[in-house]
Length: 133
Image (cartoon, rainbow, N blue to C red; front, side, top):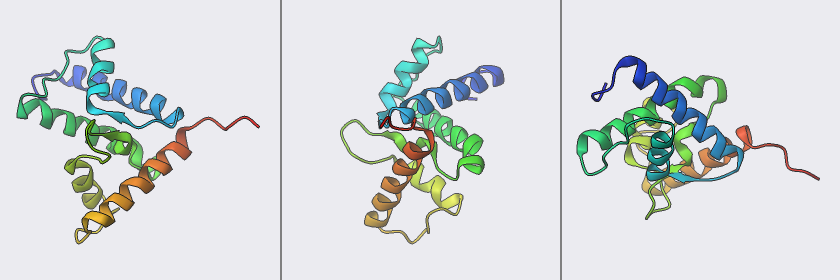
């Protein structure tokens, strides 16, 4: 998949999931660049965001992470991945949410932002360590 063997792709998905879960435990929102940097640090060939193919690959990667986790959690773990220059998820996030039946295909831009924000909150609440009192 995307010039990666099936085994390598599975490892990339697993490492991405682990990275996102770690970020969620810290109640952070991360970026596509941070995901790519974490994957490179884990020994994977980094994605080249200057190519459409690799941008599509990262979208598929995040979709695979959601596919592995959404049934158990009811939340889209990829919600915490946002563009560096925007406080928003990518269009693939919303397309996947519609496919999963979590967001109506008639959603306005405001509806999408409310949905994304609620998903970020759900992910943080699911994965974050209990706060100390």
